Length: 230
Image (cartoon, rainbow, N blue to C red; front, side):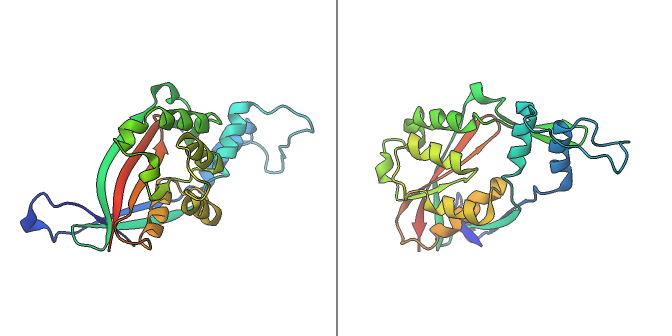
């Protein structure tokens, strides 16, 4: 359980609690089936049960279809919950900023197709994330240099995403170790994943400054600054 601290607008109501739950289950068969149907048109529907579809050695695979299949190989299932309160201990929420890269709106999106939700996840996403963060550091961190950030809770959407964040912000190799560990253990659990990373921050000493970061369709980079409170 992750505890997030908010500053109460009404001090007389400071003991109110809220429970935020995020559950992600992306290994459903219809997601994988959607990707396979893109690779093998006609494999679904009235095809005989014994018909086999395969790729001949050296056969060309359409890039959009291949990207779709590979994107679903990244996913894992997960559930995370956060208790939102004004009482410590936990993680104190400081400020938020959302950056939208309009030129990358077609790189990551969900489409409704004949076989369920079709995800479009381009191999160009890491480069777009790199450029978005590199050119918006002032808006994200204010007057703070990245060296002032003690903790990094970055959504581990994949190793290439974490590498892009590390390069864009010129971070030390160990800075994203919590994110990389969650990726190794559980894979990409979509928006629930960063909460697993934030849970590790609860073990840190009080008073440290941290930055949380996630990415999604748009292309958007959602960021927040926080402090650990014991």
